[in-house]
Length: 349
Image (cartoon, rainbow, N blue to C red; front, side, top):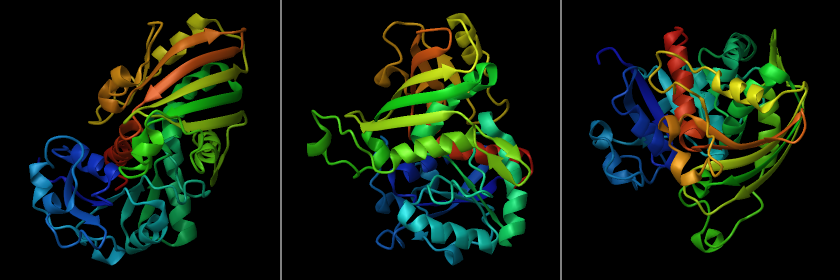
């Protein structure tokens, strides 16, 4: 695997950072050259700095890498691509500093997602929005660039909505979620709070779902994205599962459909060919009465596919269904890597 692109992972010891490291291990396009974390981890070997929680041990190819600081001027000059798994509280300054230095940053962090000149990408849905990078560089004077991955719940929802929007149009969407505790990070939800419990509040989550979904499903108009016109309402809750976000969706279609039409729209939705992280089928239809289930279906497509089921048409235009996806893979590191794979293939790095 000669001539792979050298990449950095910022926030490499956190939960999403660990998923980045795992998915990038042995990647045919990318080679991890720099791992960065907090000051308490800097200077240690990665295997000593990380509390590896993904099973087994950290990949051997990075185990002995020395962890560096999360600072733009600490990133080695031979790095061509920066993956960010930083917490929102520090991501903005670091990512902007890296872009000013000339690095291309593909980020899972929330700051800048809704900025007009920042692409917010689910590759199978809105790859054409990547053209906003030209606007971004011109307006901000950066040599580098910043591309954003969406909120995890948003990614799972929009993959299920895109085929419906294209085939029938959408007037309004209501979504209620049951989200895994890993979405809050390894230490994000105390066990005493979530065991035997559902927590009906996740700070800022509903706003992210509503606003990001309309941007992703919107239309590129020159130097900006015109958000999708349908209304969307979200209720987000935390559930006692480790991985996998389940969402109950009510979608009012703009045009009449049969359930056979709906299933065909999902099943005919095509993936991206020739990319290591891309699933063959981004949307998998489960026809069983009791699927999808978190434990059985969250790893579909290597965690990059979403599964839909429990579908019912209450009228010719009111559709109810459940969608499930892996929040750390499709909803976080996996989708971010897929963005970078597309950029690599199209010569944008």
